[in-house]
Length: 538
Image 1 (cartoon, rainbow, N blue to C red):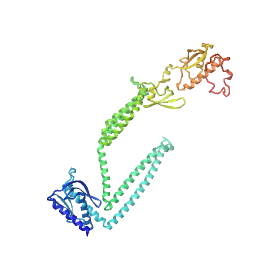
Image 2: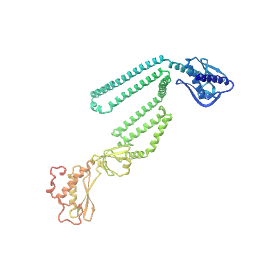
Image 3: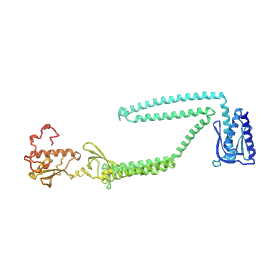
Image 4: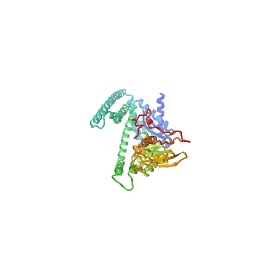
C-alpha cells in the first residue's frame, strides 16, 4: 500500500509538473542524468522542472515504470505535446516530460525527436521487462543459448583439428618440395625458421577464427535474454561499426596507397639502375673519370639511401593516418631519438666517408692502424674490420681509424716501392762489405722476398761500440709478413754464425775473450732436428 501511494504521488507530481509548465518554463540544471530502465538507456535528463532535478525526475520515472510492469502493463506508449514540451504516457499514465532544456541543441537534438526516440526505447524496455517475467520465454532462451554454445565448442574443436592437419600438410609439402629441388636438405630446412613461420601463420589464423567465434557466440547468447540484450546489441553494433569504419578507411586509403606504391616502384627502379651502373664501375666494365672502382660501392650505397629517403619524404603525406596526432607524435619521437643519439653516429659515418673517398684504405690491403696489424676485410659505414695474422678479426671505429696513423703496406708494393726494414748491430772489427754481402745473401735465400727491387743495405748509425746496419727488402705478400720476416731473421743468424761474424746484441762494453757464435755443428742441437721445417729455413 505504501509503494502504491508513493507511485500515486509521483504521478500527481508529473501531472502537476505538466500543468505548471504552461505557466512556468523549465530551466537548465547543469547536470546530465541518464534514465535507464531494465538495463536499457531511455533518455538523458538535463532540466530542473518544478523544482525537481534530473536525478529526482529519473527516479520518479523508474518507479512509475516498475509499477506498470508489476501490474502487467507494457503499453501503449504515447506522446502528448503541450505548451512547454512533450509528455510520455504509458496506458494513459504520464511517466516523463521532455522539455527544451533536456535536449542537446549543439548535437542537433529537438524536443520532438528526443521524445520520439525515448518513447521507442521505453516501449522496448517495457516489453523486455515483461518478457523477463515469462518463465516459458526464459526456458526457451536457455535452450537456444545452450545449443549455440555447444555448436560453438564444436566449431572451435574443428578449427583446432584443421589447424593441426593443415600445419602438418604444409610442413610435408615444404619438405618434399625442398628435397625435390635440391636447394637444401631437409635437415637444413628444419634448422631454419621457415617452418616455424608457417606454423606461426597458421596458428595466428586459427586464433583469429577462434576469437571471432567466441565473440559471435557471446553476443548471440547475451541477446537471448531480456536484461543482457542491450549488451549483446552493443557488441554486434561495435563489431559491425568497426568493420564498417575499417572498410571506409581502406577505401579512403586506396588512392594514397596507390600513390605510395607508384613512388616505391619508381624509387626501386631508380635504385636498381644506379646499382647496375656502379656495379659495372666497380668491376671495371665502365671507367668514368670522376669515380674510382674502390669508391663505387660506397657511392652506390649513399645514392640509394638518398633515393629512398627522398621517396619516403614524398610518400609521407599519402600514407594512411599520416595527418593524425598519433602519427605526428611517433614522428616527433623518432626525430628526437635521432637528434639526441646521432652525434656519435654522424661522427662515425663522416669518418667512414673520409676513409672511403680519400682512398686511404682498400679491402685486401695489409695495413697497420695503431697497434693493430693485418688485412682489411671490410670498410663499413661505422667501422673497419681488420684480420690479423693470428686470425683475429678486429673491429675499429672509423673515427679511431681517422684519428690514428695508418700505414698501408700493400698498395705501393704493386710498384715495388714499399721496403721493409730489418736492423741489426755488428762490431767495428767485422768488414762492412762482408756484412752487407751476408745480409743480401740472407735476403736472397728467403722465400717471399722479391728479387726486384734488389735488397738494399744501409749503414744507418756509427755507434760507440758497433755499426748499425739496416736491410731494406720488398715482400711479395704483405699478409705473410710475419712468416717472411721469421724466415729472413733465421737466415741472417745462420749466415752470420757460418761466417764467424758476431751480432752485437746485447751490447758489450768490451770484447769478450771468445766470439759469441754458434758453430755449425750446434745448429740443430736437441731437440731441433735437421728435417724440422721450423728450424730449417729456405
